[in-house]
Length: 284
Image (tube, rainbow, N blue to C red):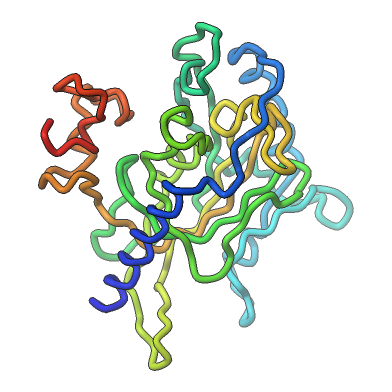
């Protein structure tokens, strides 16, 4: 198990360096800017309509078939599915304030409420596995799609590392956007344990399974990335495998404890005024 964790850490470090050096050509193409509050209200109406008219395969999770892959599948409530429970009756929501400077916009909008929805499908209830914080590193599988079901990105095999703070401030984090992914991840627990196999592969038991539905202000907002159009709400299905409490600058203080103003954002804490966030600054 120790070897597996070491392997995961090495993969994480390699992934982090690659993302720092190359954004993979995924920088968004910008379009005309609309007010954050206007788009947030419009997106919330779109998302609620989706939740009212769609369901997930909850019966498979309640009574798993022998060949079940434990993947969330979404479908429209219609025809033979007319009696299914809509997602709107199963999801929970949280509100995150978003300001226009997060997207390096010229407008002056501050702390505009954005509601996202999340669904916890499976949670590891054993032991003391805790939820990740916004400052942690997570190893997961995921699938990102639009409300029309088209998939724009996915890691369905193995897994990938997400360093959650890098999602917080697109303008300062390689323009990665998708802040809502980091915000939403804190609602899921990781798996129970890593099992090594004789062939060198590994599996994670009882990993967390869930879904996040984001307004565009917690996604790419007015950016266009591949098939993601500007101002598009997004859906992410998540398999959360591993969480590592992270000390990004190696100063012995967990990064979450360097959020000195306790606002849940790490980029605006700079106690020594050197333009390096405290969680990345060992001298702070």
